[in-house]
Amino acid sequence: MKHLNFLFPVLLLLGAGCVQTSTPAEDTAQDVADETVLVQRQPESSTAPSTQQGPYRDSVWLARSSDGETWSLDDEVLIEHASVPNITRFETEVGDFEAGTLMIVYVDATQMATGGSGTERTGRYVSTDDGVTWEDIGLVTYVGAQDQVPVDPNLVQLQDGTLRMYYYDISKGVGDVGSLEQKKQNRFYAADSTDGETFTVVGEVFVENAITDPEVVFYKDSFYLFYASQTGIRVAVGDEDGLSFTETDITDELDGIPGVIVVDEKLRLFGCVINEGIVYYTSDESLDFSAPSSLGSAFRGGFCDPDPVELEDGSFLLVVKKLPEPTRR
View 1: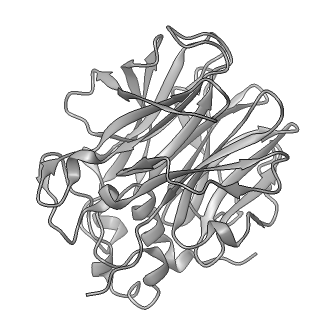
View 2 (view 1 turned 120 degrees about the vertical axis):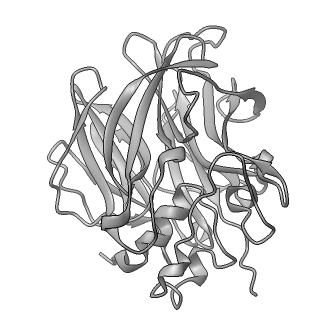
């Protein structure tokens, strides 16, 4: 397995839709030693200068597979000015949405245009024909998150049909650059919904230093939380309600930003590795993951933040973020 954990701090920040300088992931190898490359995310109501547009320059793309092994990337972008996508298939009816509806939630960065003042929001796209066509249905409304800036959304449907959004509050993000001791604790929250539009905050579910990108899956009667950290993808196991998680001590080195699905009663964990693109690992409840399998060269060149879903016919969709093309000073 090829590991590039010395570059992971850059991936961690990019995965969270961070504000960056003009050196994206695939162009940072020489600069990683310089701690100034880890530029902070802009806080709420901040001004984004032309060289720090962050997720405004990202875009969301779709990939498709009939078997989960061979993937093809769509020819055109799905969502502009968008980052950190997550895709969910509704197993039961929710509000006005029928069973089988696909919903993509993502970081909407349209307010963060050059020279503008704004913050990230949570956008929603919906498909009722297995991802052939998509409709923009507007933003998520959060109740009880007045002092927060929810980003990195992860939408799951609970067994009773309730929709739950796990997210990271960026308003209390990492602190001074360069030292783990100087970093503030990052916090994940959960918010529940019965209509797919208005989500009421239930509470804080996990806190740790320098973490982003929560991804929760219910697998063999347990909730598992995968998340990005500066040492790679980590895993925590939840209580029976999925509202509190305890970190595990897995030893596998898992690279990238996590997206997880259950396939053939096994966990399939997608990530992104610099110079290799999108990959996936497999494991059972032992959390002993396999070596990574690559999705191919089409998924290199700035693609990251993969998130999969299985359709009723056994085929698959994958949403991914694409970083902008490199620009040099």
